[in-house]
Image (cartoon, one colour):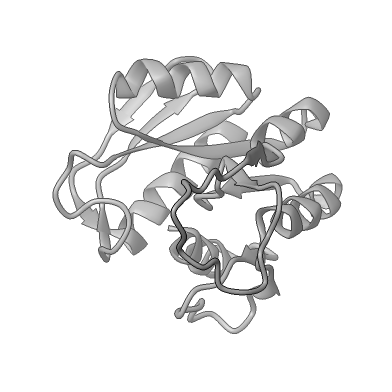
Length: 185
């Protein structure tokens, strides 16, 4: 969705910076400025750095909530004992930006939920001080990761809910941008 949103925003005339994790695809629009990152920490750092100069920030990446405390550079050999993997929380980019968001900025996030989808998305919207949240469901065939299509529900800060049918990610991106534009007006 992030790449589709970047392309659509550029098509709408926006100056777009795309903080992009390791993927094998990229934006079609050559005006999109790409900042490549490889870790949740580097993505957070870039987003935090760019945010003060943004009018609109759309956080579409599925950033890991946890990261290993210790990274092994070599293969871990199997032995007789169990392996314990210690994890620490990553920086919550949406929550961090929500704390510094100016009233003139629009901050949008995504919620990929597996149960109590609408309630969990609404909670995330409020807790992270977002202006709108785009709910994805893993329960919908053809939606989310690994597909060129998505089925979204947009919830705004005034608790307005817009549900959309399954459609191309490009069309879903335009629905999201149209909602943001309507909030600005």
